[in-house]
Amino acid sequence: MLKNLTLSNLERYQLPYIKQNDRINFAPHIIESIDAIMVGSETQYIKGEHFGYLVNRIVKEFVRDPRSKDNSFNSVNFNVAKLARLANCANKISALLPSTDPIAVAGDLNYVISAIYWGISGDAKDVLPASYGVRSYLKGILNKVYDTIETLSNGSQRDATMSFRRCLVAKGVVSDIIDECYSVKTRVYEDEKIAENQTIWKDGCLLLPE
Image 1 (cartoon, rainbow, N blue to C red):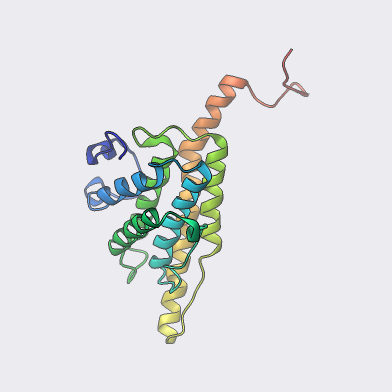
Image 2 (cartoon, helix red, strand yellow; image 1 turned 135 degrees about the vertical axis):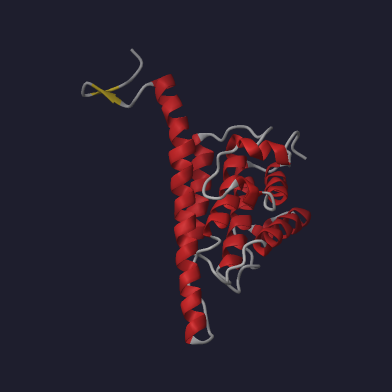
């Protein structure tokens, strides 16, 4: 269990789109998800794949994709107990995201994924700040989830229309999550590195040690 990762810690996060009172129901599942992903001796690659599996399952449930429980992100190779824990987290989060009106809960979907994403990138207490390589890997994972969101409906025209709409909302949300994390978190990281190592070019020359 990550030390000191409690509900009160979430109050300091300025995460997007939803009011603080509306975050309360998600908080224990966010904490549990971060703990499930980050605690253990797995490599950074596997921790990222744990994140990918969790997000993929949440998004697929949101769009009512019948493949939501299928293996993804190498989950066929996950530790059985870890896989069950991640699936349970995804199920509990999905239950709080009814997709009868996807526009109405788009902010909730953004919030819960962003909270986990930022948490495992270093915002959660006792989680080390992610390196640029890890940030790139996690961004790639979210892009992979984005690429697999598609309309799947064998029902009526109304069902097909709603499936199409849910997919559009989900794609917009995942795209915004990627952009927001870059703008608010990774951009700050890059500015720190520029201050530390300077930029790439100066006065027509590559900046290199003198």
